[in-house]
Length: 226
Image (cartoon, rainbow, N blue to C red; front, side):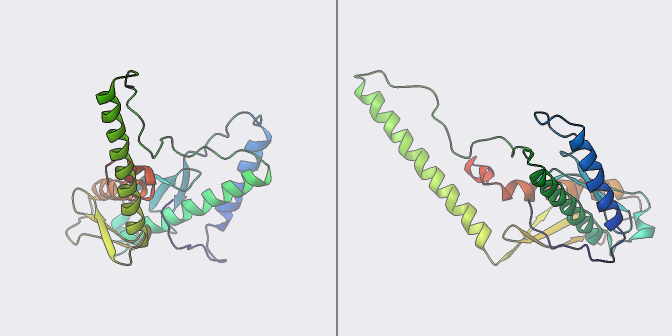
């Protein structure tokens, strides 16, 4: 999960929504056999305080999707849409944290993390016994893979612990996400946006947030994409 600052205060109007979410989850748990997954936990929705932006996360709080309403220009405006996106994401993550707490209280198994082994596997080709050159080549390949894993681990740790801000931008250059390590510091949009750009802003933000979420996962670096 991307690290974001919590935003829900005691007077936040969304607290009632959060309470309803917990009650509905409790009801779903009561009606779902223990061996079956609880529906809806792969798409937990959160709105910003104005209801302009909706973000969707999974039960781990990882970003899934978002939507920006067509009236965004009049509700949050160009100066507030980036903050609204982060606000919606943070609130959705808060609901995901509540969901995990409810699951633990009921001793239910949380949804499994995304699949994928961070470590590279053997390619399945084994050297025939007595084939010295093939055995030597396989040993060299294992050593190379070991070096690749160590290099990827170093890159992951270096990025995680860096105090230097970095920016992930959407392909259109309309949305920019600033991070320190894997913590979201801020977001901003391009000054050239227009009232009709709701979908374009959402598309850009979607790409940036998905990329930031992928980078938080060590498997991204071990896969060689980092």
